[in-house]
Image (cartoon, rainbow, N blue to C red; front, side, top):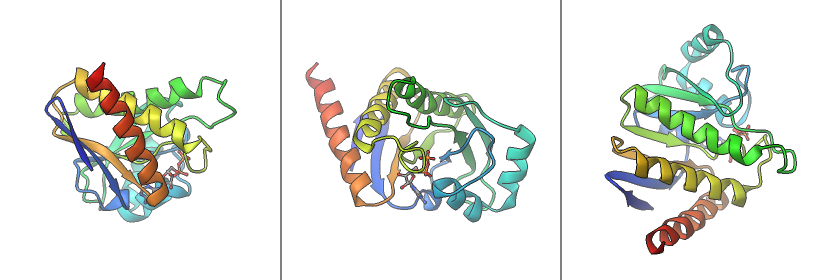
Length: 182
Ligand code: ADP
């Protein structure tokens, strides 16, 4: 599914992020940049050891921030590694940290002159963020950033599985339709 936000195509796809041909894909990393399961493991497997070598040199990334490496053998030229919050009930600043992870990733992409970016659903796997709430924050934050910052051609989400895809579609329809009316 696609929407237009300013001059940017905002897309939602179901699939595997590691196959994306956007200039950058975003990794749901941990703060030590140590690799792990989920999308992080898939990116390192597909991209090869160069990505981990660069991560080691960078050393780490605080929650809500982002760093960048090359994409190794991936089709994407860059991987932006961001760290979403571990969900601990919702009263530990999780929403702000999750929004921050999306904003900082886009800010870094913008600084590097990257014009297309694909995100996974940050924090909704091992980090336990409830999917509907995370989808709402993700869509709202990325859409707001794109409205304020032209210069991207294509930005969106690659969702793993139909449930995640449908949840993001619902969030996008709701957020973007509400925005048009307001
Ligand atoms: P976190 O630790 O931030 O929760 P996870 O990688 O455990 O990160 O999960 C984040 C989301 O990424 C989950 O919704 C999971 O289903 C999804 N995911 C896992 N593998 C892939 C992949 N290859 N492409 C896209 N999304 C993926």
